[in-house]
Structure formats: C-alpha cells, structure tokens
Length: 182
Image 1 (cartoon, helix red, strand yellow):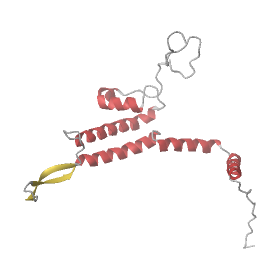
Image 2 (cartoon, rainbow, N blue to C red; image 1 turned 90 degrees about the vertical axis):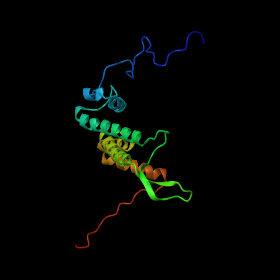
Image 3 (cartoon, one colour; image 1 turned 120 degrees about the horizontal axis):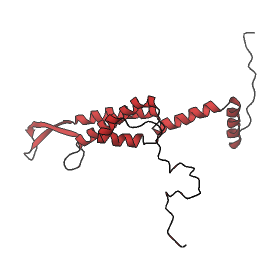
Image 4 (cartoon, one colour; image 1 turned 90 degrees about the horizontal axis):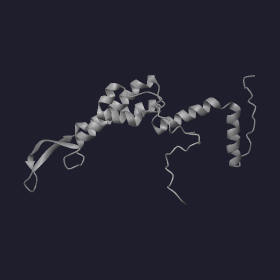
C-alpha cells in the first residue's frame, strides 16, 4: 500500500458524515457557571454531562446534586488516604491504659468518620444516577419500559409462543372456567 495511513478521525471529502463526528455544536444542557469555577465539580460535570448530552433543563437540579455528591465522595476518599498512600479506616484518638506484652503502648482507635460520609455520598450518587438513567439498571429499565409501550397483546402472545416453540413446549390449552354458584 502506498502513501500514508488514513487517520481514524478524518472526515473524507465527498463522504457523508452520518455519525455527526465533525459537528461541534452542543446539545442538551450546558455546565452552569458556578460549577465551571470549581475544578473538581467541573471535571465531574464534563464526565457525566459532556457538551453533547441528552439531558433536559429539568434534569439540571439533579445533575448539580450528582456532581456535588461525587465531589463529596472524592474528598472523603482523600481524607481517608494516609501519607504512605494506604487507606486509613481507623483514626487514632489516644492510647489504651495498658501496654502490650512487648511493653509498647496500644493505640486507641475509632472508625474514620470519612467512611460514613463516603457511604452517604455513594447512596446519594446511586439514587441520583438511577433517576437520571445513568446506571446500567436504570438504562435497562428504560429499555423495558419502551418495549412495553410499543408491544401489543398480540405481539407479547406471539413472543411467548416463539419461546414455547424454541423449548418444544406444546401449545397452551384453552380452559373454560365454570362458575360454581350457578
């Protein structure tokens, strides 16, 4: 093959850009100015809602909260990181009134309070992600809800018949229910 290798992101002349890769226009919601000023929250916003997104204006309050709780979780994780790079799940608050067998003082520790903050933040992140359709489970629910809106009863019955046929099950029998009170 002669010549240079084609670039993967090049838009060819005379070729239609069917994926819209060359367009630079923004769609969806833009990053609010106060979030853009905070370097941590702006990075998280860019990750959650890039310039081209499918969010509407009514999603902005939940997006703000989601970005906030991500920043809180990041700060809690940073607070638990020790100088050596390990995670400190305990915090020393003193020493016990007795000594170890080798004569050294035994540290008195309590659970790091950042663990509770991280737990609260992760719970909020999960709930908001679910509301905004960002989690895999929420996306699958959205797909299921779309499927139920478009299928009719006949489509559903045909789907079950094809499943039964795939397993070699006999067709369902129609049973007439007789009212015993007559």
